[in-house]
Image 1 (cartoon, rainbow, N blue to C red):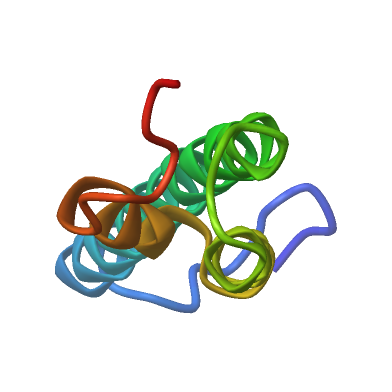
Image 2: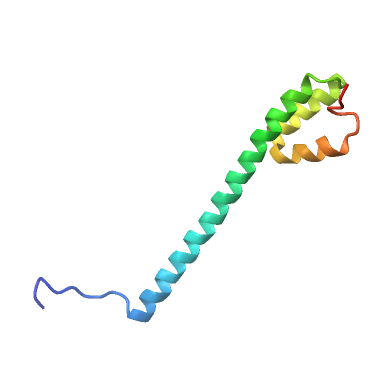
Length: 91
């Protein structure tokens, strides 16, 4: 065997399976990163909304609860925002 020739470690079918698995893994990582990006975006929006609502006419407990929910739970804050009738109410 000369130095210019290389040996193949995988057969063509094994190589195809390997690259298929790599492609699936990269697709999975893309989906995970997309979910993280959307969660972060909505978390940031929740944080800004909770700051705005903190200074509106609401009880101190609701204002603090909304702020803490936005900081620690991100988008789940919007459940509190929509289902609490007195939170962030217009004056």
